[in-house]
Image (cartoon, rainbow over all chains, first blue to last red):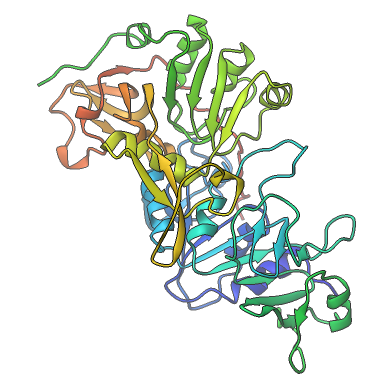
Length: 219
Length: 233
């Protein structure tokens, strides 16, 4: 069974460690905040200028002066702090953010990522994605393994304009957990009931497969 | 005490003319100088180059200037959510320069702080780096980016005083502090303008030295772009 988007978020949440400052991108990454493992404390950074982001506000308690980088209304948690955009990207470039989780249109086997532009279609811009991927040491991509046409999004080489080069460390999809190593993409885990053959068939890039590949544990 | 208060948005923007390059604070519709944008529409000035993270929505924020075709060029990091923008961009009426958000912020800060250029890893190996000087530092490649050179910076703060000191609220802070003092003339509009000496100097985010003119906005709609809520259990 391929994972749901919620399950992908749950699996990525297992990568959170106590004390981590985390930047979450739009889409599946945002869902990770719902599944923080018990007993650990993390803080979410939103690049528009807040650390200590909380859940969405209750109806009637929305504040126009309080949004996340996706422009959604949010709340803050005790200990939260606001800052300006220059300082926010100082945190990012200065590697003070421990983990960046973002979506992608394509990832290549050398860790290149493309997620901001489809030539010929409307271009909305890269927002903070280029700054994040260029500086973060620890980048996890959350995405679907194949596109709507059934084509692999994990490629030997990206076909779309790049967001960053050689930066992705881990990929979690509905089918698998993979690690980008200097030798290529290593298959770490498979979704429950999904075969290694199915993952290989869904992946354009060469996969490094060593021994038995365990199933992901999703609660 | 140097007195920076002007009595109206008209007075504050009196010398903003055709062909000006203007920085405008805000992230989405959060923390945008609403009153000044409305005045730029009223003034009907044209061929503007706007440096702002986003381009507003169709009928609010910088979208209002786009509707009247007053903008020649936009320099932004993200410009979705705006159908008129898309139409003008695809038809070639509007010139658009997309740059990474952190680079945008730092180019503002560099202009504010007298740093002509800086190196950032953002965009290396992508089309953003085309034509730019690149250099390796500590084993990692960086791209040289230049400070902005703008005529006016228009920022929005929550509170301000007659000396031009500013305090921001929540995430409405965003690009406003880095844009203050980053252009030849900085105009600040605030929700509440008080006499100098009223604000606690410890709590001021941006010193008035970066601001030439300050006024209290007549009204603030503070539109929410993406109202996202949860139900009470």
